[in-house]
Image 1 (cartoon, rainbow, N blue to C red):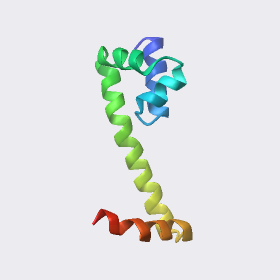
Image 2: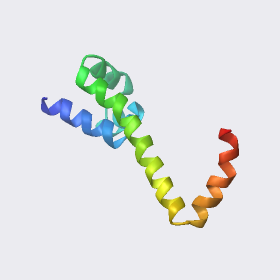
Image 3: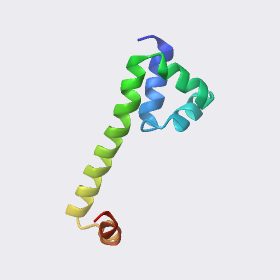
Amino acid sequence: MDIETRHIAIALLDSGGNTFGAAELLRISRRELVGIIDRSPALQTIARGSGDLMVEIAEKKLAEAIRNADPQVLAFFERTIGRAQ
């Protein structure tokens, strides 16, 4: 993996796979970033996988906060759980 690809991979991971955020970090247009990703199977995998990873991390943090009985998280969870059902 060359240095440019590494920088893009890091930006994608830092932005949770969000191409707008990654492009902003890299100071390039989103269109340019998407073109680069389209030409790189490795970056395509990172872009898809980083979003899934961010969801997994968020779910783990939410579960931990619920276990710790964080009052703000419990209130949020109670308010939003009905929407998902």
